[in-house]
Length: 399
Image (tube, rainbow, N blue to C red; front, top):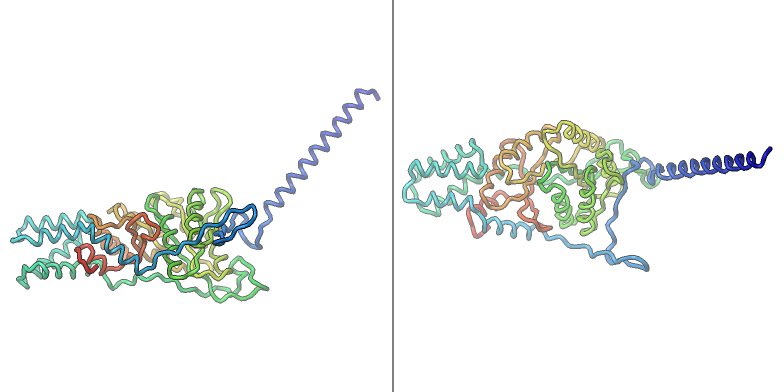
């Protein structure tokens, strides 16, 4: 054997050894990545924990202080005041009704004002017919009496009899054991309840993810424990946004480690972990999907089915931008067919000309407006109060 042949054989042996070593390393890494940290948990899902307030140590950065959200009562007073200061709808109606005479031109102006406020044709016709009758029968043009009649009729349209409370009581767990929910409890300990689960849906641009964060703050103000599920896996910024909101009030976020992961998997994991950890409420954020995209709506239906396997959803809330008018109603119709909506959250509801959307969307779907947002502040979300809303629109100082 020549020297050249010996060298070639040695080189070949080295190359084969290098290839085998590389293969072994790659396989080892794959096994490590594919090993779930929790038995039964989806592999790409992790929980991001909010830092403990005041904790610090060598080589670490002190965690930000946990914020104390504004109380519900304080929110209601502040939001009513904001509505009253910008109550363009009520001011426009009272200006016409305060004229010396109410001719047909005046009634047409009232109709136009209500339609521009997105009240809807049927509610507008009903309200004006009743108003005409009441003013004619009573024969009073006293401004305070006219205001009282208008308040009564507007309140009837908003419908104070609808149940606007959030259903947030724990639900019985089907199957009765923690392991059934995808989490092994201590020594297989039986679980009695699962947390209330709130699904948030809506199209892009309505402020849905921000509303999820604000709702978490509202529930923390009521001293409830909360877990967030970042099921908008197509937009990494959405999960980051939720993590920021959660860290401010000590709330954890269940999110995917990779973009484009199965949203239903994240939703399932959030509910399972919420049950295993005894959390009061799990809020699931979904992708802002266009109502005319059938595939995305099918995906939302899957999230609903998966999230409901252990117990029915406690709430399915549609986030609507109050300024979108009739387009918002079209969105509501489609989402109601997929997500079994239980309530509406109206964002950007100031006292401008769009207050009538409250009436229109409720009459369209037969479900109540439960929460309203009036500003960009972290605590600018509050339960919807029909009487306070109408009083604010009419500029009632007591509101």
